[in-house]
Image 1 (tube, rainbow, N blue to C red):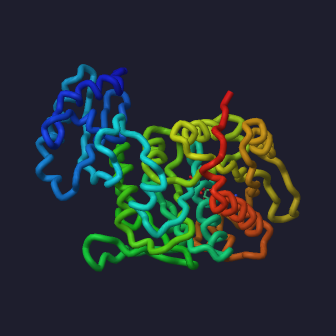
Image 2: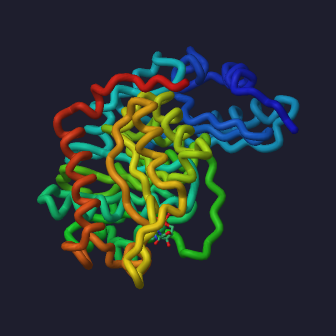
Image 3: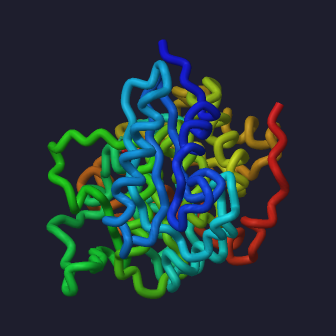
Length: 369
Ligand code: ADP
């Protein structure tokens, strides 16, 4: 297996002179989202989009420089629009001031909250859509951004289909259902298209879905993150101005430490973790109503308290939750008086209180053992 390192890549990129011809592209701080995986390298070079064509030779030279490193199997460099606030001397590339970025990317959005999970299939998208609907039910102007570009499920869960309009050919109009604004890569690429996304592409796609979409004024934007805690997820949490993140996990997943990886990832990029939601927490028999703790229920609550993170609530494994979500009418709207809808609303209220009081950002750093 190839063991090319980020340092090697940065060293190679330091031989490339940036715009202005006096400093290299690493010192200029315009390299972002570097991903090195098994000899495959991806990164973005941030340039003024109006001058993108002019920088094409620089992009090619950067690719070639990295390609020359022994062990490199592939290199993808993309030119992305730089953010105005990015002070060019600020190297290494990393997070900019979150509030500044939030303003630039989505000026009308007050809070952006990520819904994440350590792995796929734990119900992250189900929770994200129900939370968004619960936020809207509480009167907050709400949007949901489906950033799970590997397997976008929000069009299906939110019951929205078709393609977004773009009246000016540059910006996309947002889609809407149940009073929630929805945007997803699923609207833009056919469902059966296999896509290989590299870290920087994920970041720029996501930034476009934030910046080039007419979100209007929102109190809260829920981001349904891609599952897992790999490089793409890390880059995204770094480049999106998040007020905080919630982690969805099953009791089992907590036991297997997958959720902890999620916590660690957000800690690395200094995004406050607002709490854990235990999904598929217990099972209620649709026939007799009896409750069984199939996944050793309660693990998340215990783990959360051990880690000093808030436990936001538990959602049972319930056929109605599955059927309504997969059928495009999540339980919060289709059966708002059900106990499960109430549970989602209580969790949404807790999240709202945290971000709107500002405690999201001010939360202390989580200490991991
Ligand atoms: P993820 O986004 O983590 O991959 P999804 O939200 O797509 O997971 O959920 C995976 C499947 O599990 C979907 O069919 C969904 O309807 C179902 N599901 C999620 N949460 C629950 C729940 N609490 N009870 C029953 N089914 C659920």
